[in-house]
Image (cartoon, rainbow, N blue to C red):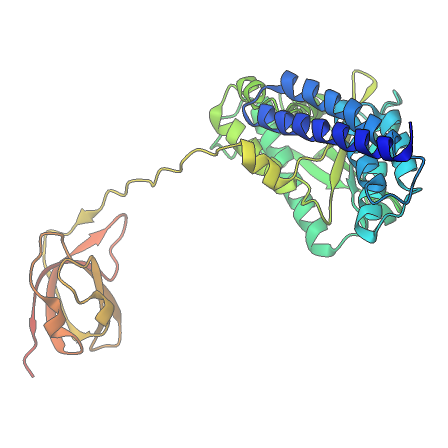
Length: 384
């Protein structure tokens, strides 16, 4: 096949791959994981064929892009060795700085996936290994804010998982949390690998049914299911809706941002074998498929004092002077600040009292204890 025919056929295959990738995206949006994988595999086959047709001219402006796309589809399909091979071909072309960075970032993910296929377990069964990936993280560098946020959110996620596995009610803050600690080792130079360990306080762990392996297994299972886009399966795996939504919130917090951190390798020893997940769903990616529950504003049951209280001072805030306004503020003669709630049915024009010395009569409005908050009963100009 001559060059012109090769370029034309390559463009045709690329268009087919792009259509299949779109179908994979929309399949994932509706939670059809099997269709997403199938479309992605078909997109890989078409894009890999399109890329191969350009290898006789590595200077072609689409050479790098097609190999990058094909390698990404192969990676998403679990074809790691094929992805690594496509990346190598892509790097032989005239890649710009951005494309070259994307190729090397994908290569790091692929090689981590290949390395995690090892069955050698981590050193201890209470250890969770995290490998943060990104251009800087791969060199053993990460800014303090990103690292601090990651460690804080992983710490919270571990504690939440522990409470779930131990069957605590979601809102409970059991004193038993004082029985274990979440500790982290320094990152390994050159890979930014961090080991997190659950350790007992004291010589023996006294929590009933506590099993660090079960905690790690739950985390790996949840992230693996989320990585594959099976939100329905993930949701049904939690007996508590609150814990499910809490996990999703925390997963978004630790998810790669796509820039400083592009993927997170999660590894642990389960049943004496190394289990691993490579998680590269970004927070934006999760937001595109997950709808958090609408937070209901808690109803506050206010109480009112039987007796009336009078305050004399200056009405100071003009933005609360229209009839029916919920609240305005008053500075009393002793310089104390008062909030005055106006009932909806109150129809007196309060604007006429702005910046005037007034006497307000009202009942204390409070939840637990009284403060400088009154429910308005009456207002009049104060006599000098």
